[in-house]
Image (cartoon, rainbow, N blue to C red; front, side, top):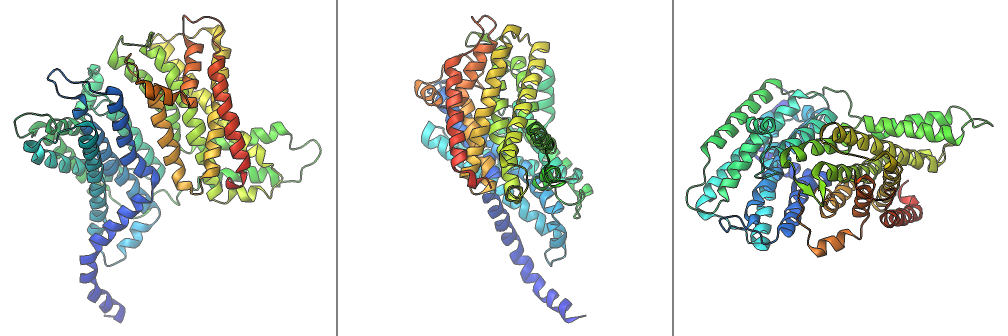
Length: 545
């Protein structure tokens, strides 16, 4: 035995004893350094607990129990699923594709310890999410922790974490790339949350959606947790729901064990920002600019093409900008039937609301993410040394955001007109297009301003989503009833462009509205925000490069 082997054997027991807490701590620190993961796991459920509780106020059930008593569990379940399913799946895929898992396997640390550390970290983060929501609910909204059901709550939470973790590992083992894992994790979790008593609690779902939710574990986790917060006698255990969680846990563990691999499967990790600059660099450096070449139209067209190419390589952005709004437009009218919102059918109202969301998320979240990715890769600095003017790069990004926004609106129109009786007067199409174009310019400018102000690229999406999603809620984009918002919330929302873009689109798409559908007052506010953001982005242009 060589000296190195003897030294390794001598150190191995000590290394093993210290490896689990050390690797667990490392995983927790990595989570804290990932603003987007922290946002969806901790900030997102907490923000919506506060918003929904504020809107509901002091409403009670038929038994006199405050409605807020039943709001903690669905948001807690979502936080647990984010930490134990999405985070575990994506984190495992990242470690595998970057070669970290393979290198860890060559260390004295046993492979099972490496996986146990990731599971322990996700469990700790999920526990923090539940504790945070519970404390805020108890302190701010008089939520009661039912003492006689606390053991049931702890057991349900542990089984839910185990189930989500096993399924997250299983998902990571059956996908080849990080991008596919991330897109599938979010693409599965968020739609399922709507049919699993997480985002829509107590509603009568259509039979097919109800069956789908009942077959999958998230609904059983949500209902079992809700039972532990139901005031009254009893132990709070839900044997049927817990049995389903155990079955899915065993299934996920079996798949993970059979398919788990340590070696990268999809080649090198995607370098999207670098790929996006290949086109601009080649087009601008292949030959010096000569009279008649490099026209503004050609420069702009090239930048639009490469910006759209970057979006096509990001399925998660495409999902949230195009697929997700279409799913909501199809789901909400199916669930709530003939409910009306501010004098309109739900489908008619949601068509305008989700069109505003599509435009906002494309311009304010997706577009600046691509710009910041290029900045982090050094692309924008190198671009300054080419014949391509920087303004054409930015113009290409903004136009690409407009194209994607228009595509999303077209998908919404197709779903609404085909299946839910949404009507759009052809004479008002110019008003719709103006609102979409001005909204896209406004939110793209705001996204560029935020990108210029933020030095850290990793925090951008957490900031933009963390601002946009609550604003969409208080601006009544995701509203599903006629109950008015408190006056303070409405006054707050009136300051920002999301609500004004919504009102402009509602005016343009209202079937019985007068005139050509132009809401000039609301459009003026959107234009003012666009001008202010462009000034900030111009002043802070150095922050973009």
